[in-house]
Amino acid sequence: MSQKENKYFLISMVKNEADIIESFVRYHLKIFDGIVILDNKSTDNTFNILEKLRSEGLPLTVIQDESLEFIKGKKTTKILYDTLQKFNPDIIFLLDADEFLVSSNNKDHPRTFIDQLKQEKVYYLQRENYFPHSSDNLNELFVPKRITYKSNENPAPKVVFTKEVIKKYPINIRQGNHGVLPKENSLNRETLKNLKIAHFSIRSDDHFKSKAIIGWLANLSRHDRKERASRRWKKWFNRIKEQPNISLNDILSKRQLQHQPINLSFCQDIKIKYTKKDEVCFMKNFLNYCELLAIEQSKLRSELLKKKK
Image 1 (cartoon, rainbow, N blue to C red):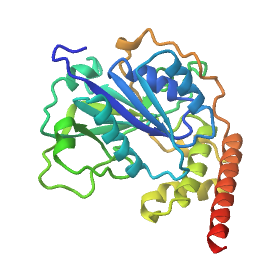
Image 2 (image 1 turned 90 degrees about the horizontal axis):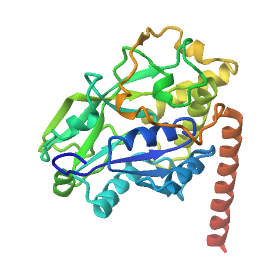
Image 3 (image 1 turned 180 degrees about the vertical axis):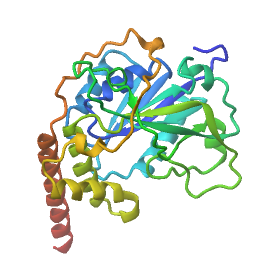
């Protein structure tokens, strides 16, 4: 606990992150006082790994989503308010399972800088993309220790909320946790300089294909789908459809990467227990998701027929 005795929580909505979810939880419990995760009907081992972590007695709350729709903004907003009501944290961070909070100087413990945040502001975190490299040790299951090369891309930032802001304003989180809807001109905003996110968005061939195919299908299944919000999923989906044998090397070949491992000095004792080396199987994830879609379609048709009678 910090000298101020403030309480900091992390919330996340996840789907098919079995290869990284244990790394994500164990790493961030070295920073936060608790984590709340909603699993959006993962078709891989994500939920089982989360349950095993929870059974260790870790300060981890796991919620299994009953709806197949990947309506991230709406569902994350609900988790935000539920977490505030149940745990009363001073600050809540919203991160995806492939995002790791780090200090910008790559030396200090991230919590040192969280302690400096003020209650009356909404904060934004810049992100840096990390990608697999030919020099990676594939036997290393702790993802931020295995993947140590980053690109020069600047993806959209992520939002951080304080307790006072949540209480004062009607928060409606944008899809992807990139901001607040509607935009409040009265919000006092600040982009953090001492904290950022290391983003491990793609981690293997199977993970890339699984993420692209299921990501696009999940967006198609939304009742409020907007084409613009899901265009990158559509792009990847179509590229894989046209080139079934495309590999991660093909995707990353034009990216300029530089070696910059993140600081792991405060979490050297982390041991990965439940994650297997070949955790992601694209075809298994894809077929499982098709099965879920078929079941969902069957339920909808049954309900429609009952209404007609």
